[in-house]
Amino acid sequence: IVVTNYSVRFNSFIPDDLANSASVATTLNFMLADYSIALAAKKLGKEADAQALFNRSANWKLLFDASETGGSPGIPGFLKARLSNGSYIKDFDAYAWGGATGNEYTEAAAYQYRFYVPHDPQGLAQAYGESGVMCKALEEMMTAPATFHLGTWGLHHEQIEMVTNCFGQYEHNNQPVHHVLYMFKGAGCPTLGQKWIRKTLDIVYGDVPGFSGDEDNGEMGSWFVLSALGLYQLVPGSEYYEIGSPLFEHVDLRVGNATLSIIAEGNTAATPYIRSVSFNGRPLHDLRIKFVELQRGGVLNFTMTSEEQLAAEFYQPNLLADF
Image 1 (cartoon, one colour):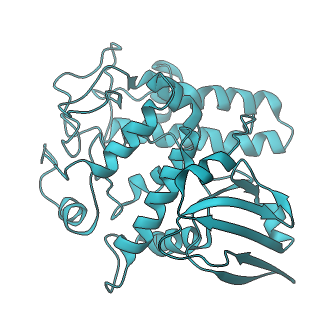
Image 2 (cartoon, rainbow, N blue to C red; image 1 turned 90 degrees about the horizontal axis):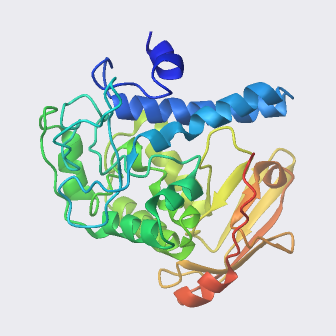
C-alpha cells in the first residue's frame, strides 16, 4: 500500500496523513532507492525503466520548501512533509525530532534530513538558489547550536549523543547525516567538506574508546575506514567513489591480486585540504574515481595543503552525472 501511495496516487511522495511512520524519511529513502535501481537498470540496458526510475528519484523537489526556516535563524530551505491534499504540514519545526506531527523523520529532526538527497547534490544546490547558498547552509549545520526539541518522539540517546559527542546539528552519532560532509562538493565548496571530514575523523572518533552512537551493521566503523582512506561511496550502486580528505600518509590495500597504494606524503593534522590528487599519474580534478579503477590497483597520490584557496583552485567540477 505504501508503495502504491508513493509511486502512483500521490505523485511520488508519501502523504504525512496517510503514512504509517516517517513520511519524509521514507519518501527520501525510496527516492534514493529509485536512483540506485535506475543505475542497475541502465547497466542492464533497460533504458525505459532506468529513465522512469531516474525521473521519479527527482521528486524530492516536491518536499523542498525554499522559504522555510522552521524557527532556525539561518538560511531557509528544508525538506517538509506534505498532506494528501498537496499542502505542506503546518507548525513546521526544524528542531523537533520526529517532526511536528511525530510522523515525519526517523531518529532525527528536519535539520538532520535537510540535505538528504545524496543522489542529486547539484540539484539540491540549485534548489537553494544562488551559487554558494547551500555551502552556507551546510556550514551553518556544522556551527549551529546543538538545539533539539523533543517533539512527540520524546528523549532518546540520539539527542544526548549529538550534544555530547558531535558538533552543531551534525548528528554523526546516527545514520541520517553520514553522507552530509560529502555534499559540500556537490554544492560547489569541496574544501569546506574536506575541513569537516577531517574534523569528524579527529574529534568524533579521536582517542575516546568506542563510537559516538549507534554502530548499526558496522556503519560507524566503515565510515571511518573509508573516510580515513580519503574515499566514500555517496550513492549505493554508483560506480564512483567520492574523494574526501585522507588521514594517513601511506596505506597499502590488497585488492584481489593487485595492490592499491594511497599516498599523502607529509600529511598532518594541519593539512586537511587537497592541493592535488591523481591516480596512476592522471589528475582527478573532479574529486571522484570509478571503483573499477581502484579494483585494478595502482597509486592514488595526494598532495595535501593547509591553504584552502590552493585546494579550491584544483577542483574542476564534472557536471556529467550518471544519467
